[in-house]
Amino acid sequence: MYDVIIIGSGVIGAAVARELSKYDLKVAVLEKSSDAANGGSTKANSGIVHAGYDAKEGSLKAKLNVLGNKMYDELCSQMDVKFKRNGSLVIAFDDEEVKEVKKLYERGIKNGVEGLEIWDRERILKEEPNINKTVISALYAPTAGIVSPFEFAIALSEVANSNGVEFKFNTCVKNIYKENDIFVIETNNGIYNSKFIVNAAGIHSDEINDMLHGEKFKILPRRGEYCLYDKVCGDLVNMTIFQTPTEKGKGILVSPTIHGNMFVGPNAVDIDEREDVSTTQDGLDEVLQGAKKSVSSISSRNIITSFTGIRSRTDKDDFIINVPERGAVNAAGIESPGLSSSPAIAVMVLQLLKKEGLSLVKNNNFNPYRKNTKLFLEMNEEEREAALKTNPSYGRIICRCESITEGDIINAIKRPIGAKTIDGVKKRVRAGMGRCQGGFCMPRVLDILSRELGIPKEAVEKSDVGSFILTGKTK
Image (cartoon, rainbow, N blue to C red; front, side):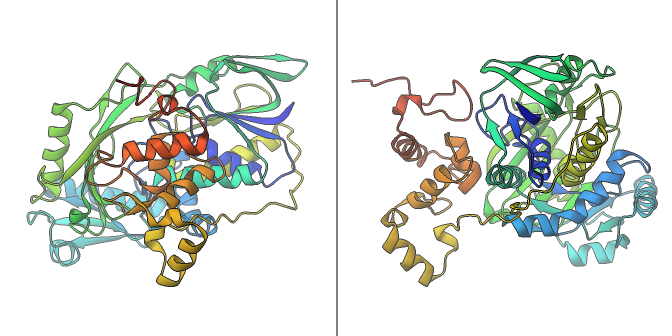
C-alpha cells in the first residue's frame, strides 16, 4: 500500500516525486518506459527556462512559469545541475512584429517578469552581432535560461529516490478503479494500491484522466522537429533568439545549449499518432529556413543530428491541474512552458493533495542535495591523479567526441536510478552526444553495459523495451 502513486516520470512526475519526498510518505512512480525522462516531451525538449512573458495573464501557464523560473537557481545548485541565465530576445523585423514585441512586454510586466527591456537595432546587434541585420526591435528578458531537460529530470528523480521514492519502470497503467476509497492500479507488472494518485502521464494524461472519471479533455499531440549543431557553432548566438510567436507557439528559435552546442527549432505539426517522433525532410527544411530569418548565416553544415519532441497540447489552452476524482490530482496538458514551470507545478500538486486529505509530516532525514559524479574531463590534475589511482578505468576513453571515459560510464550505471540502456548512458554522461553520434563508441558502451549489468550483449537495449542493438552472433 502506497500513500501516493505518481503516473509518469517525465520532468513533472520527477518534480512531484522530489516534492513529496520531503515528507514521511510511501511514494512510488510508475513509468511505462525503461528510464526516467525517456518520454517524447522531456527527452526531446528545447531546454529553455522561459522568462514568463508569453502566456496569457491570469493563466496557470503565466503564474507557474514565473514562479518556477525563480526556483531554478537554488534547485540546480542543490542538485549539481548546470543552469545558465543566458537571457532571451524576441526579435521583430517589421512594424506588425514590433507591435507584438510591445504586447509581450506589457504582458510580461503584468505577469511579474523582472528586468524586461525593449531594445533597438543598435543594441541588438551590439549584443548579438550575428542576428539578421534587418532586425529593428527586440524584447530582452534577462531571466530566461538554459538547462539540459533530461539531466534536470534525472536529477529530480535521483533526489526523490535517495529520499525513499520507489521507481517502477517498464510499468504501464492499464486500468484504475477504487475499492473502499483505495485506488487499485492495474498494470502489466501487477496491481498497485494507493491512497492518492498524481496523473503526470504526459501525452497519455487524458487516458489516465478518463480512468479517474475526470472532466473530459483530449491531448492533441503536436510534433516539433529540431536540428542540433556541433560545438564549433556554439557561440554563434549567446542568448536564446525567438521570433514573434504565432498561434502554433513560440516559433522557431536559435539557441546555445548548456553543453556548448547550438540548436534550431522546433516547427509545429499537428499529428494523430502520439508516439510519432519521426523527422521529415520537409520539416527539417522548414526549421532551417525559419532559423535563417533570425540568423542568416545558419546553414545545414555542422548539423550532427536531428530529433523530434511531442508537445502535450490539449483543447483547454492551459495547464490542467485539478482534482478529477477524490484523492487524485491531474498535472496534465503540460506543454511549454512546462519545463520552466515544473518546480512550481510540483508545489501546486502538493497543495491539492493536502486539500484532498494527504497528511504531510516532514521527513526529518530529507536531503535536498545531490552531488553529480564529476566527469574525468572536468577534473583538475590533482583530482585526475587520485581518480586514476582508485579506478584505472578512468584512463580509457570510450567516447572520443565528448572525452567520456569508461569510469564515467560505470558511474552512470551505478548511480541511483542508474543507466540501463545506451541512451540512458548518453543522457547521463553524454557518451554518444558528439559529432559522430555514437558511431564509434556505441559498441564499447554496449560492452560495458553488458558487463556491469550482468546481461548478454543481445539483451542490451538502445532506449526502450525491445530496442535491441544486436540480434545474435553472425559466426
